[in-house]
Length: 372
Ligand code: SF4
Ligand code: FES
Image (cartoon, rainbow, N blue to C red; front, side, top):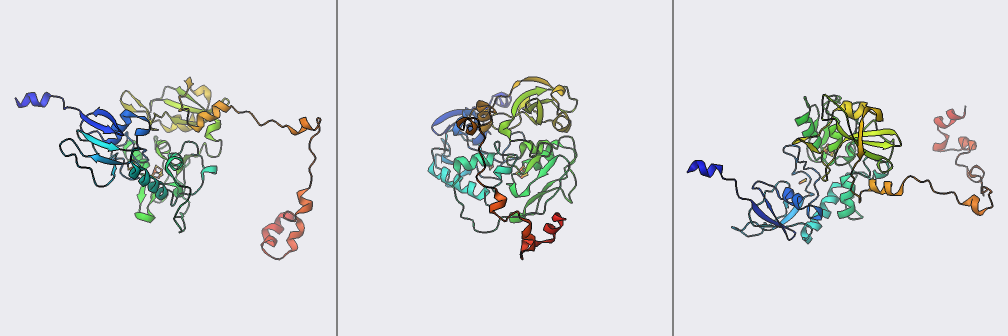
């Protein structure tokens, strides 16, 4: 008899999220149950990453309200819970976007995550594919109540491929889990705690194992960016295409980010949750050779354009194409080019050599040196 009970598949649990009911296996988290429904019902997740064991529970962006704990005990949970860390119960009722409390708390979480985050978007390589940017657009407020100085860090070089901007880090720990779980010898992690916590490589050692580049892909913000792509292009000007090659180290399935025929960047392929896609049940992490050394179209077999969500700014660029604005002045001026109304050097002393003789900072030695 005991044998028979063992063989029985566990009954599925019914959970209702934002008035939509779904059946999931026991042990499923609220977040993963919501992902089965999809769309806006799914809470945002900045630290959880289904392919990284033990991830989640750090950022609080996935908070939801549990309006009824289960059929057996329908009392609501008094506090909002992290949906990536809370498993469903049969008959559980969850509110995400239908809860004022959740939306209000999420605003607070965004404000908190931005406390130390610089307004770097105009010069950050992650702009256009940054989850914090999306989150603050959807849930943020235009102001901050924080009146103190933002954290500053001594700049740290973590090797030839990855650029670390610690000021942008939200301490989600994803990169630490990548280092721990898919590279051979982890040499970076989070040092210190609270306000002083930071990602570091322990005495600035370079991260030089074959799969270290995946840390760039899992970083939800621009704290870890690809040095070979840095400042080369805005992501919405590039065209993503799926490609593959025979690689003896990784799955070899990637997205090439092209500008014309130039391969500007190589990344792993992402699913609809922004996580690396799986192949045959295994995450498609890519090796550093594919990511950093194969930057020619001829290195790859092209499969076709990558499917990008049409709401993404990356798709927007493609709809618009890369047309340069038309110069209309000569047209309306009978073919003549406009004449400048003034010469800035004549009306302002800012760039004038005479400044060298004036008192104050403009007479610095540097300035004089340039003149000789
Ligand atoms: S560097 Fe990026 S991936 Fe690593 S903890 Fe900071 S935000 Fe997360
Ligand atoms: S995604 Fe749940 S706490 Fe970060």
